[in-house]
Length: 439
Image (tube, rainbow, N blue to C red; front, side, top):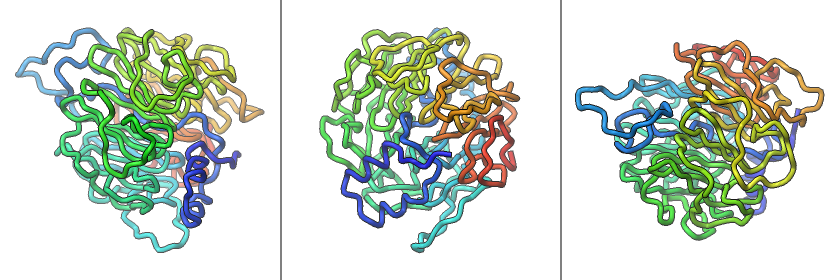
């Protein structure tokens, strides 16, 4: 088991964190120097009537015309979104349940902070004061929901202001409302920042900005939303460790922030404080960020990825330690319908309901039943997840993965150091999916 620190925690130390804040992170176990972090729910066009009429359809097909007035929008979906060592699911009825590490309020159970250690929560627990969630997103140690009203509420870790409530360095175990945001239609979590798109297509971000991940041309943190520079036609958004990307109307992608591994996809390794286009990418219908990598689902079902490939997280059959600033095609997949990103691994739901994952798999997060002798051994070609054949969506955490099925069950696999698999226990990792209690 690994006990290092992810990039976000190193950034915290370099940002003059207080002794108390650093101490609060000591309990984060089983985490290594993460190469892939950030938004952990497929950042694709929303599948309800809040999406712009000319957005690419969520199923990846052609078109883009308005639905007839007498056709009802698709029903609400059950979706999963994962933090580092915590997991959450948004149910069809709008309630949200979380489990796993609760040291920073990640489970959203409303239990006050009293200065003592907070116990892990190994079985699903209802997030308090949330019964109208439309969408769910998560960062490294915080989560957010988009409410029916268009407001966004967040909970968990808040050192950099990533909860967006005008306060920094004060964590929240009860959801708090993001300030000055009342018309959101989609959102995404980065490691220690958050982004949203409003109904008009404008993007805003808040939280840490040490690499320009807020996209507003500065490196100043913000505990309230700030506009992403010159981005007014976005239809989906995703976050990584310290970069973000947005899908624009017409199927093109722009990215901003840290670019040390080429995760902005524009052919360079130069950071950017404002969005820059990916010139070689078109016909995109969904995007998914990792810590130092990004993937895009294209019309037709193929996937392109770029950025870090240290653990094979680009899925092109060969891992490497050099930057990859130009998109490459994920091998063996031509029927993907949605994406899910982990810190050092990625997954796709295929047309038949099966799941394929690739990248780092030392704790079983690939879910193919193979126990690796060396935890750092890459899995650079997509491998089939065992025992899940009717998946609706998938999401990755630090070293675990979860999926929701079409019949509303939830399965998780990988590390269980903090009870993030949701099966009532802690400590024993699983290399194959296990059922989450109550689902």
